[in-house]
Figure (tube, rainbow, N blue to C red):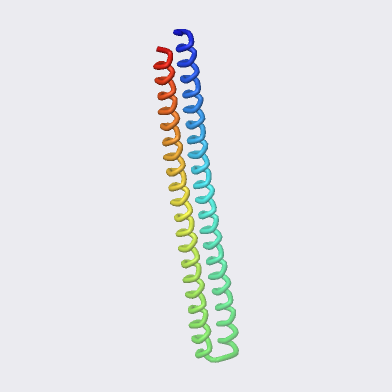
Length: 153
């Protein structure tokens, strides 16, 4: 009887240890995945910001070159009034481009923040569910050991 009880206790302890190790592995994998996803999202965000800045710089350089050429031609060909009109139009276009770039950048930042928050919430929910499952398994194993000991006694 004592040998049977010892075998049952050893089997229960081994099963419990395997379950704990598996849950720990799953939690570690989930945390690593979340960190990798967050790093990838941050890299994507940085790339988007760099691309938007390059686009703005290129547009500003092109607009300045075009404005200088137009001003030269206008000064040679037409009167100063046309230069003022072209300058106003170019400034308005530059303002619209800057506003559009800022709005796109803000939308990208908000979307990345939303994705990060959703991922963190999902990981927390999965970890809580895994901990509940672990507690239930431990309780069931304890109940089985108690029942077996009572039956043997």
